[in-house]
Image (cartoon, rainbow, N blue to C red; front, side, top):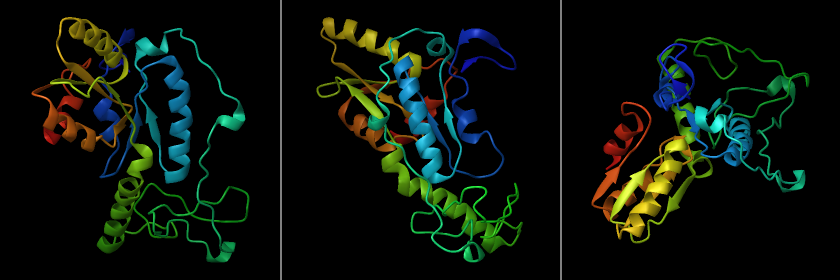
Length: 241
């Protein structure tokens, strides 16, 4: 994310694409967006983004601030055996019985690899369980609700946040990306002056971490939301609290 609009300021940081990541396409849909705050987290969250995309059959945005993208920090790359990879659900029926967009208990249909003999139709239109375009209200409604439900059910595996010195905090900060790095420095200075402040840092921006933010609002007297834009995620914080 960099300064904008349009081509913007190519070497200046910003956090102006938060809502773009959520509402950037036409139609009503769920979205997943992750916001790393260090070079090491860029590595880790890229793996997590691919895992989420595989398991839930959907795009995942990795919102890296420009300032982090141009930083140089140590990255300890683990052995491949230490990296957990999520596999997509695979079809367990023969090709002639395969329904590529059928509903399931998780809301995520099984997805065959290309070249394995499972043929299906892909379209940008609303479609039925076979992938063929349909505009019947009941078909559209069922598909929309399935897309929403798979993320609602999968939220425990998607949501991720960091809590810093919140145990005794009476003042809370909600920040993400490079703004959260500055917030951590500010917390150290404030704590040295006896101000009980802590940080809630969402690594998953979408879906929004409503539970932790709601819990924070019951503990602290004030919440500060610093971000490098004119106010985007602060609106979600206000909605929850």
